[in-house]
Image (cartoon, rainbow, N blue to C red; front, side, top):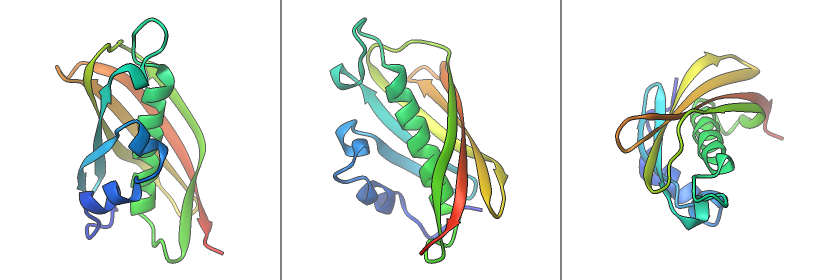
Length: 139
């Protein structure tokens, strides 16, 4: 499913000068059927109540699902672009780190669907998202 020759270092290099670098999202593991990353929760990720902003968790989720989709296609021939994401925020986080994992639900020729879970440092479920991507021909 996922190209096993891609490394965590390559994924982190792709993040330079992007939103991922600004939010300090760091890829931590990649496997045959998953991609994992972590993100700190600090003032950059807060909403006014001092809790992690829902948009920050969705950014982590979309990053994980999009990168996993990217890693599952021949990037010389295809690109993957997001079509839709939804998220359910289960638990709030004020500080520390959150850890996300993307796993495939459906890998098709023209669409993919990824499930992304985000947990806190105590393994409590923080949010769950589903990302649908389109696989398009590279032009």
